[in-house]
Image 1 (cartoon, rainbow, N blue to C red):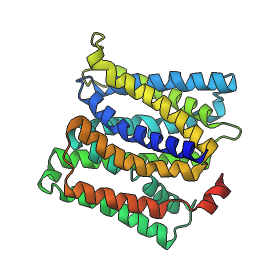
Image 2 (cartoon, rainbow, N blue to C red; image 1 turned 135 degrees about the vertical axis):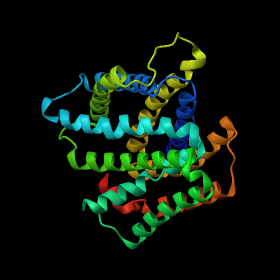
Image 3 (cartoon, helix red, strand yellow; image 1 turned 60 degrees about the horizontal axis):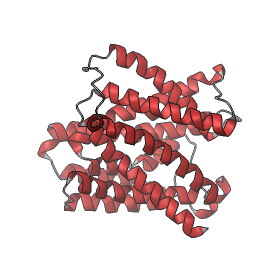
Image 4 (cartoon, rainbow, N blue to C red; image 1 turned 90 degrees about the horizontal axis):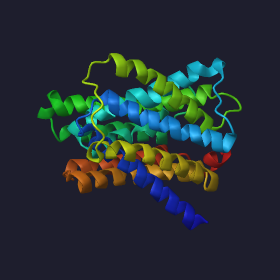
Length: 297
């Protein structure tokens, strides 16, 4: 059983790492960002809705918590996805994966600000190392910080802040009696409703090109990959608990860099390697201990 859980953890990390390269592929198709985001989020809604029907027999959308689904859809879907689409082709899938991997560290930072978690010396050091890892990425192109690289890095840095705010928001306002797949369905529906006015009124060249596999394969892959990630996430949580889920983050950091190098030929320079090492060390420092995680489970 332990070997099976370890295999699933590695597979989950590989999927998470691949996600950034697929986002770069999608951004390079020439389709508008609003169209890409709309199609992917709509696909997620259909898949998660199917989960709810299969596992719960219905899709629960109580009016009293519409605000909760809207908040989750905004900071967990719409805003970070647009930022990733902007950053991926300019920054590279490898660098983007490293920056977004700061999410657990920034989650801890937000938890400290909202007093939902206690900051120890160990966790504080992990937070400091997380920000240091971003500084090493910036040092690889000081001149470029005022150009496209700097704008893309700034956009990418907002993504883990969004995910951190999302995790804290969910932890504080999770609706009673709702299961994870029900919340996943509700937030994806909330995101779809937000995308409707964006697609209709945001003038970013929104058109629906003729169906062509070379154009839409990355979008289809993103939708399918998200479904696989959800299944793996719930499976690992069921078999191994939150400690094992957290370990997939280390795999995602490494696999994100490797996928970027394999699929796009991105350069694995010394600054990237140093940043990856620092981020992995930071994640180890902020990871929950076995005893506390078992209590949380």
